[in-house]
Length: 458
Image (cartoon, rainbow, N blue to C red; front, side):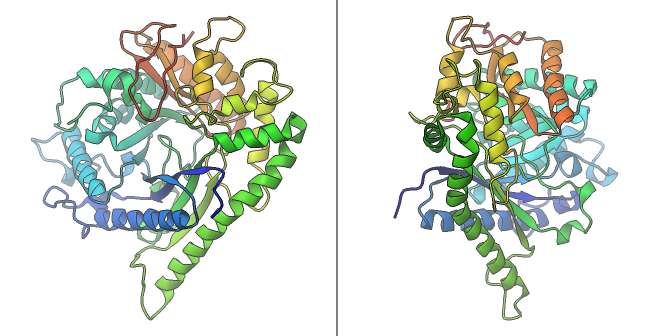
């Protein structure tokens, strides 16, 4: 079997919960017979079956994931029946999280995004609790629209709170092993998100369809799924072939179409089989209660930590990029790449479909971040500048631990302004590192990240 030119970073299922899915949760044990249990069971079956088919065709699938609708629609108590006089709102939220965490563990689902906060109060109070749960299974985000100062301030406060969670008292007996929180690492699982729609397969911004937008009852809503890639090495191959910005579209259209069509066909065939089985009077062999829907592939260029997996290094292969990534020509390259990724012929797309530049997940970006030359220095402002023509925003950027909430809020508002002005999905995921200052090297111990220098937020 011919080796595949990229990996499948994630097969992500998208599910919508309602408050009543958790009826009786305190008396139950998270069994698959509950409504939420049945939905998780179906999502787990879906992503595992898609994973199996992809692996059979020679693809390496790194993760399977589940993303839900905004957690404020189902996680936090919404009726008086949910609460007792002696149990506060956060205690009930914590109980639901513990229950859901156990349910996901039984299905071997290690990554679950609980959607965005749409309420600044939830951002500051609930998001840190979500991120703190034992094992680091949960991610979440906070919606921040352009000019929404209250939401930006709440997101900034949340980021600061999460950065020191490993030193906080475990009020709700949720944290267990705190390794996913040490040294500010908890913010790997939280971001401020702007203009992000449902269907993004990448975390932490992933979210399912909101209850407020569905035309039918939630019980009739299909469970969707999308594909995210890890393709830095393939990006380098294509950009080396293109050599020049003016050839990117030709090379991308030809090569991406050829490589992505088999994945699309595999997914659509699976959907047809499942939905036909549900309609067949002879029996539903897949045992699904909801129909399923293939949402598409997020075509984003997404780096890996492999030797040739850097997207930034791939872009430096272009003739027009003068010097290190971030210098003249980088913006033009980013624009050409993004335009091409968003218009690949005959491919159904979902998510960002842009250029991912996560500083701590791209070895070349991390290296540039440690350079002392003023001309080559990587700055948050440069990353934001490039984000004006591509996705995904400011991502996995280490910043000083004593950064003020006001400074963080201003940065988040800048990202939200770009997203709102151009109606493009952008996020802001930064890591205040306690006790650190700009220019110092990070010391994260994570299989998902490398280390770089702390960037000044100013």
